[in-house]
Amino acid sequence: MRPRDLLHPRPEGLYCPQGDFYIDPVRPVGRALITHGHSDHARAGHASVLATVETLDIMGLRYGGDFAGTTQAARLGERLEINGVGVTFHPAGHVLGSAQIAVEHDGMRIVASGDYKRHADPTCAPFVPVACDVFITEATFGLPVFKHPPDTSEVARLLKSVEQFPQRAHLIGAYALGKAQRVIRLLRDAGYDRTIFIHGALAKLCDYYESRGVTLGDLQPATVETGGKSDFAGEIIVGPPAAFADRWARRFPDPVACFASGWMRIRQRARQRGVELPLIVSDHSDWDELTETITETGASEVWVTHGREEALVRWCELAGIVAQPLHLIGYEDEGD
Image (cartoon, rainbow, N blue to C red):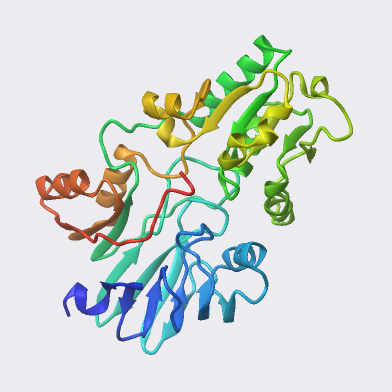
């Protein structure tokens, strides 16, 4: 069997004809296997969805309880059979509930990574390398220039700024699913035990993380309706990046604009966003982690999706690994 006989791209997404299912389809399909809850991978409208219980719960929070016709929860490491095709979910380390999906048939194993990272993250299960014949890897930060620093050092920079500027509020732009909760937990692990104020768009997901055992400490709504700007002097406020472009962000005293993202490695991006304190905290693997992961899987063939595909394909070729870009359409960097 050729790998493309088992999985191949279609306009809807990666398709397995033997099992008659798609992985992270971008259009409504009959059966969808979902790697994680970010909206570019997890979309509503499928007839049937198979995903981890956390991903199913997150989709319900984001889209409502009727986001799919039927749902089935996959346990990490448990092999399921779909029309004779073996399917197993393995931790991806990206966000809560994220998983790689291994597809096996006639002695061939292909692992679709979804999005993944190798940095330790107290808010989700760590990535587990899975031996396979073909590894489908993302390449969001697939250039050698991307080398993520320890997230603890980035949080230390934030806390130093809070100490230096007690009269200013620190506004942190962080994506609602995964990044916001990770930044909050990193602050707690660094010893910050004061109230952290959050935008309303984060409340449901933060509550859900708490329900799954991820302790985030005292969180309060970031609103000034009952007080004045001075109430937030010296405080930390976390909100989705989009909120920093509207009136909400202007409510706070002389704010220090921060943004937690792997893209903050690129200074021009920070300047374009008006970021005063860029925090290089990514929920994707950097260049070294991507190449190390490919090596660890032992895959003889690699397919590269959404990101800087060409550089990683070239690295594989130089390492003697067959590689090709998939050019999948519809995936963004919501969780960068």
